[in-house]
Amino acid sequence: MNDLICPRCGGTNPPNAAFCATCGAPLAAQPPANIQPPPPTGYNPPPPPPPTGYNPPPGGYNPPPVPGSKVLGDNTKWALGLGLAALFCCGPVTGVIGLILAKKDMDEIAAGRAPQLDAQWAKWAFYLNIIGLVLFVAGLCLWWGGMRMARF
Image: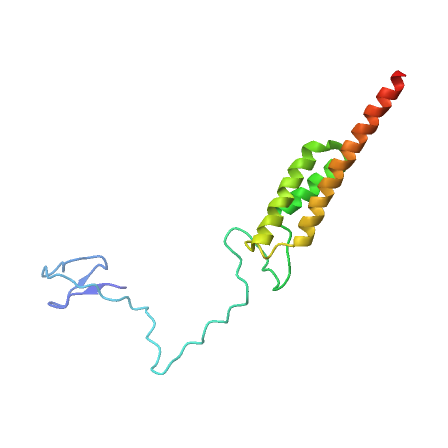
């Protein structure tokens, strides 16, 4: 079907033959018969479609930030959670860590290294942790005072 024709003697050879079986002449690779002809001259393929905006990075989808919008930093998110924990159960353990994390984001925003972060949320997280610490100290003072009054 796609046999090679020897250019010297005209003999037919199998498609993978390197030399003619009749005369021994080297055979040049011939293109297969089912190749489409080149497009006519003046043919311009259609242009590729324009990009549709944001192309997510490989491995995940991160929606593009809306210009002018602010996002919560990871430190601020943790500080908010730790502040809530400081209010209800863990006091100084989570309150101090939450203060440090909120202060980190506040410093990054103030230095201009993170203009996309929301400064208001970072401040709220900072104050929430302070309130948690103050309530813990107040509760500790009330408990200690109650213990001292019980002795008399």
